[in-house]
Amino acid sequence: MTRSGRRARLLLSVAALAAVAASCGGGRKGNEFRMTTESYSIRVMVDPAPPKALEQISWTVVVNDKETGRPVDMGEGRIFASSRDGKNIANGFAPTDQVGTYTTKLFYVTAGPWAMGIQFRRDSTAVLERTQDWTQDIRTADEPGEISLPSSPAPTPPPDTARPDSVRADSTTSEGAASPR
Image (cartoon, rainbow, N blue to C red; front, side):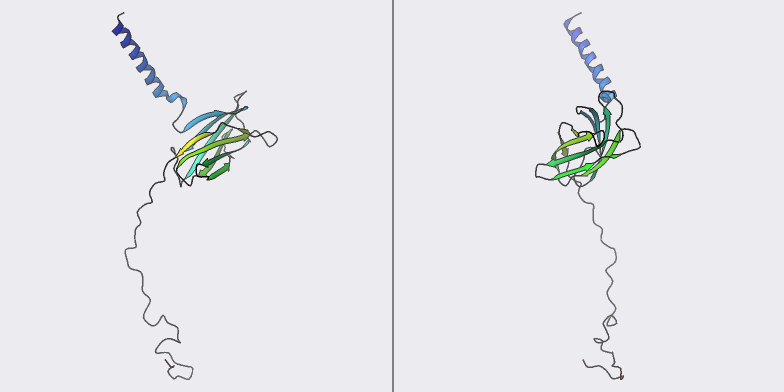
């Protein structure tokens, strides 16, 4: 086979491999990543992706025992984050109806990179194990929507009838005489 033929075959093979990898997605979505601790294999998903400041961001965490591969149900954990300007947020996991799956929400007050981490344990008697920290880019919040003003002017109070009796020009005293001004 000629050199140009081998090159063409190699390029065709690389293109085919790239097409297969793109169609499979490597088993991951763009909003999903995996990490481990000493005892756990953890899959993390964020919604919406990419996350934005000033929005409730949902995190879903699926925890499996690293040794057996079985889901870890009824565990305890939290996700936490710190921004460069010293803002800190954290929230605990709530179990879902899916075994080994937990959810939580975070509210990022500023855009930019946030250092993040997860801690998890099987139950209250176990030690909290921490994942390796990662950096999560939080995008700038959307601009606020347009403000619509009311179409009719604000109501005006009725003339003189809105004033108390002691101020009205036509008010009278209990004897029926006009009150002094």
